[in-house]
Image (tube, rainbow, N blue to C red; front, side, top):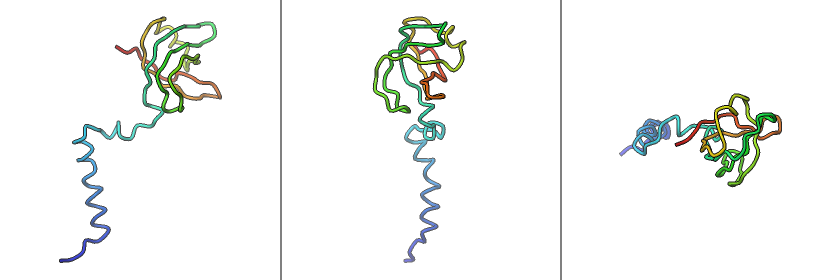
Length: 110
């Protein structure tokens, strides 16, 4: 019996990877999504329109290495402040923007 060449083995493994990912319920989009795109969950505690800030009680922010807590965030777009009210549950992405924690993506959650 002949030995399999390393190239043949590598090609076989690479060719079968998408099949295993699909069977596990993962898609290419979720399997390769950057940490910054993973949404965190939170609750709006305060909307400060004049300062352009939201106070959010949130779960862990994996992309920033932060534990669950309540903190103040700037918003990327001031229009975001009009989309939420105190008590709203949200899913959001926060990033460091010019040295400030900033909500860059946000949507109301169920």
